[in-house]
Structure formats: C-alpha cells, structure tokens
Image (cartoon, helix red, strand yellow):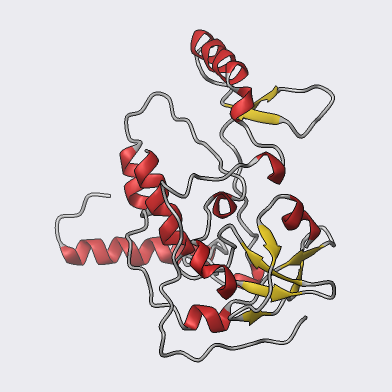
Amino acid sequence: MLCRNHQEWKQKRDERFSRNRKWGKDPVPSLDPDNETPATVQPVEEPLTIKFTPSNPGEITKIGSKIIEDVRDQVVQCLWRNKDFFAWTPQDMEGINPGVIAHHLNLDPSVKPVMQKRRYKRLLSARHIKEIQFPELLSNIPLVPKLGGKWRMCIDFQDLNKACPKDFYPLPRIDQLVHSTSGCELLSMMETPQGYHQIMLAPEDHKKVSFITSDDTFCYVAVPFGLKNAGATYQRLVDKIF
C-alpha cells in the first residue's frame, strides 16, 4: 500500500479496519493463552535407524535420512567399525581417567556439616557408588515420579551445594552453537549417556557425597547429578577433548 503522506496512510488504515469489523473479522487476534493450541515441534525429516544387534532393540543409533547416499554409506560403515565405542548400559561405562579430569567440591571450611535423616543397587553394580563408614555429610534420597509411572531416585544435595562456592566456568550459549554450525553440510552429534557418571569424583571428597538407605550407607565415586558445579566440570572436560 503506497501513500503520499501520513494523513493518507491513516485514512487507508481506518478503512481497512472498518472493513474487517463489517465482515466480522477481528483486526487484532486473541492472545488468551487458555484458548491457544499448544505448538508442537515436528522433525524436518524421519531419521534412519541403524541396528547394531538385531536381538537387542535398544542397541541402535540414528542418522539423517537426507544425507547423500555415498556419504551415508560411509557414515554407516564408520559406525559399524566402531560399535564397541558405544555404551549401552551403565556397566559399559568405564569412566574418564582421573588424570584427565576429576571433580573437586572446594568445600567452604567455615560451613557446618549437616547430617540429613535417611529417607540403589544399579549404581552399586555400575561402580558409581560404594559403601562407606564415617561420612562427613549425609543426604536424603527423595523419590520423584517419572512420566511413565516409575520412580526416580534422587539425592538431596541442598546443604552440600550451599557450602560450595560457584564455579564460574563459561557454559556454551545456544546462539553461539547455532552460529558455529552455519554453512556446515554435515552435522554430527554425540550423546554421552549419564555423562556426569563418567567423571570420577576426587577421592578426598567421597565422604562428602554420602547418602543412607535402609541397607547401608554409601558414597558416590563418580560425579552425581544434582551436584553444584558438576555442569562446569563436565563442560571443562568437553572443551579438553574437543
């Protein structure tokens, strides 16, 4: 719509709004969130599933189905040659060598230790935890409901986290990650299942990440989820590797 001056533009705008009201159209749509249909994100393509073991449906990975056929065949062959690098269970994860990185709590010595009341066997079999005597701090085990109706075991590290100063190691920003992939013809992503559990906790900090069950008292050997500064340690490891 071309207008010679501001007055003509206002006149045409009023005429357009008048026609909308006459025809029963609302020039300003409703923004009531209660009446809005929730937006759903749809994949741009259906990924291609690669099965490593036909007898075990869980041992799969996915690649883009729109990759050029020659490149796709090379990617599939590379995955098959290195399928022993994938960890399908917690027992398969040997963890990161502590010589590369280990998480230190850096506990404030002026904070009084707190012993919470008591409130696991997969973690024990995976060697992520071990039995311990005389812990320095003891945490609860709240159970959180999952979407599938099951329960998730969590450790309440609130008191421990309060005693640890924040590690200000920079974490990646989404806009920077998106910008870094601009112009790339092929993009690959690597998922690290239970990534924190692959980082060992510094031995002197084992007694600080203890929790009690009806059977015994345990402490974490690997970095647990919910621990303050664990994200910074994990990002520091990623930056070292890549």
